[in-house]
Image (cartoon, rainbow, N blue to C red; front, side, top):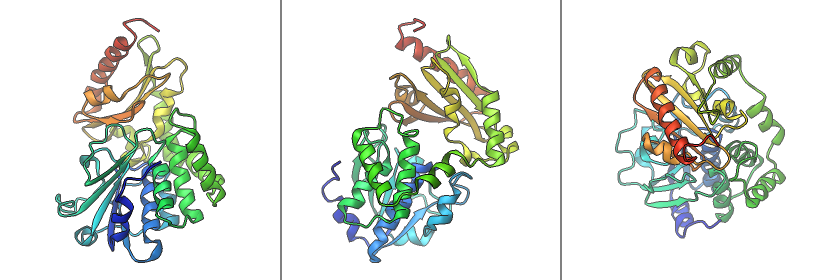
Length: 334
């Protein structure tokens, strides 16, 4: 994987930097942010902070903050930064920046954009976008390696968490031979496979379990079994003891049904706004579908946010997705 010319030189010339990810960061985003921050600060010549407003991190990923203990960005950090690195984020409007930070937080700063979303808008001064990469964590691994930064066991665990979750346990088509080699390297250098596996897949809180029960109960199948979707409205999410930050891979529930071409999860983490997660199976791409609703993402994993309550969003999205699947299959049931 080739790191763009000048990117490492620019990064290592900074004395202060802020790392920004996307709203409701997943393990790939969070792991990449903190691993990059810790790696850049390795020689103690650069002060690096990460942008994580209160309430950003899900219950499931809170252990990462507890163990890594990153320095958090405040208004001063943004104001004094030589540059900003935005990771795993397709467009500026998705950046996870606290409301206390002025809207012009990037003005006058060099912005480096590191991402693997096909829909990335190339908003940075330096853009490194690898749509074929398994994860941003895989990209950060190569960046730190080429920058001659040491990879501690903690950093390796962060990168491994990002890689294993974004590939759904190395089961997606984005899992290339190089992906598995990088995974092997971080494990060889100390990634705690057992802990990451337990925390990511076998450590649900009671609230997360209740939310998962709701997702199972609300799962529906339409379009002759080609589309499966589930929902959770605002009251169901908060009633389970969860927030919008806890909505992530529950889309794997409808996705798990045999024969499904497109799986969807529609959730109202913020009252009056509906988030949609799309997943394609058997080579079906969903990026075009997400874009038609103002969203973006990857070819087979994308999303969108609609400015409407979930009871209005569900019929609209189901109809749009049914039309899309019919068009792909020429109107057949195959």
